[in-house]
Image (cartoon, rainbow, N blue to C red; front, side):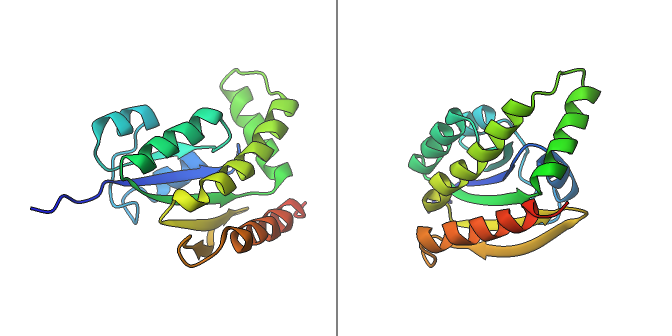
Length: 167
């Protein structure tokens, strides 16, 4: 009997990009009805799962490395939203939850998320770019086996620059 490789779907993006909303909206559509779990829960189960990450924290990178070493097929849906809109969404959410908003923390996590995506790219099966300014819009898909890290990084910069220019 051949054992199927477990799948990990990561819904990622900067703070305020719509990761949680995307996970809820598309849960049964193409995320293959995988259970939405914290990374720790999913990885300890050894089963296929989906999770929501900013890709900004060092532990995100460590966990993705563990998943890759354990044979998970990793797919990332990366949400792009302009810096100003993301900041407004993040500020609103934190204030609504009674948490003080820190612009400096936001900026740090915003930049770290993009760096995290680049450092994770070559461990993935595929990375989808999705713009979320007013609605979810699929932009592109990148396969590390077919698209070099250099080309991917340039495409990432182009999309990031274009959404950041939206006022």
